Image (tube, helix red, strand yellow):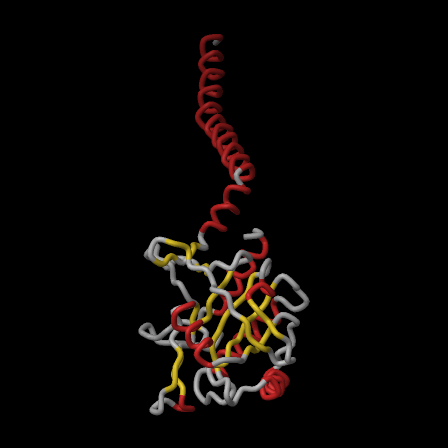
Length: 246
């Protein structure tokens, strides 16, 4: 009888070992993984910040060149007024009948995300400065809901503005008699960091997207071949630069 008892006890111990011990080992392993992920939180945040790459031209980081124009309030604004701020750049004209209204709606949406944030800004350069005087731009700002204290609608010498667009940012802008409104320009937004460098995230192939599509409505439903909205990622990347002090 004693032998049977010993055999029974041995079987219980064996079953206990088979069922319980692996669970204990798994829990310990899980705790190590959880602990590791918690301790590496800073590294993950740093890695996320590194997703925003510098736009490179001829092996050098592309920086916004010096500029100086007049805004809708009649104030002289230059690139130094944006130092220490994360800001978005666009080129537009107030009578544009095509993509500009969409671009403004998108930027007003971005504006809402950073209302009252003095470290954020927008620079909108008119490519029709003859028509877009400070007074015209002031009325345009009121009509389109431009309210942020650091959103400047800038006008001035036409050639300087075109040079800033085509050479400074490589965002095309120019007169075109065949285009609606008499001017042709891209619908891109540039994202600029606190030090004046143009930044962007990478696409799924690991290449910088360089600029963000501003002429596609934020909530647009597009076909697989169409251009997808990028305003949500622009907002996310702007927040990333602001939060990381980059």
